[in-house]
Length: 422
Image (cartoon, rainbow, N blue to C red; front, side, top):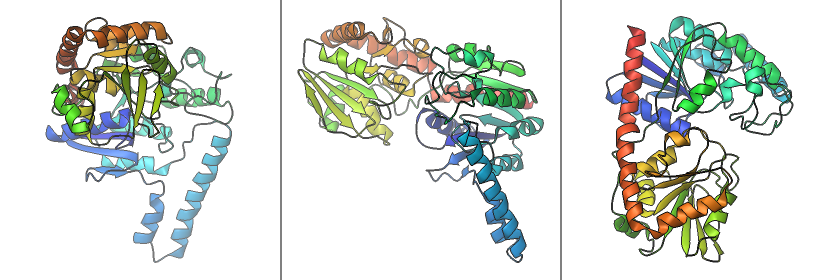
């Protein structure tokens, strides 16, 4: 079975990690798996970048004997560049990427699309892909459901056609309000073919079923994301701290996420306020951002640059007493799953799909978004009660093994794809 995944990156954040993990496991299962990305940072031989200007290379290698062929190729590239610039200036989706059509040359049995935003993919190619292959949209956010943002927060415009966008600077920012036209264009694309949709949580699937994707969706499945349990698993806290050079007696709280203090998806201030109000000294390790340490009363904040070494990241989880995830909005954060797999209890805000990860009172605690007092109380409970931490951490590791195993996730997709090819 030939599986071609499409994603913005091969290495990077949550969606990239999910796609990469599936790619590796598909290959291990014996499938003919390829990964096409907008920007490639790794060196995997079965991953390729969708070159924004393949015609140029073609003209150099095969048609170099004719200057006219080269000029035509460059003219096509310039035309696409101008069209994209015009659309971007009006807040419209940027769609003119000829390299997208190269996917059809792969002749896959299944095209599994992850994030299609990131200025690399032409949505108008999807109906043609649907004629040739089974198309499965694996969603990680809400971008395809509306006309602009990756998460709508309290806005319900995506249900009715967008327009009059309340925040054009929300991710992904646009210069003008083209959300209504984008919504109409996406609806037109998805009205032309049949497809399946997968989400990691029921929360996102409920939104899909009320969106422009509902009309021609043949099937929707909730398949939770998983993590590599051969790396992220329980281990000795004291040994992890020794390897990382951390004090054995400190109370350590961990948070991981890119640009933690400025990300629109995180409420860093909530976490800091809750920790400042604790009646004891505590160290916050904030992974994903380089900065000078901060000391406020009993709270010490140490910033750790992004960690690409997954073994070291697993040690950071094991070294922590509690993992904290102060999301404003999130779909199914991988860091929560990794912390649970390492046997660390989680305190997180009850938004998006997080309540489908954290079993409140058993594997950690859920707190209302913006509620620093409740977060402080839950953190205090766990930091003061070692037996409670151990019990919740052990249960978190059990749940991760049962529900959030990357191998089981890949098998669920492969079984589904086999049904489609049959």
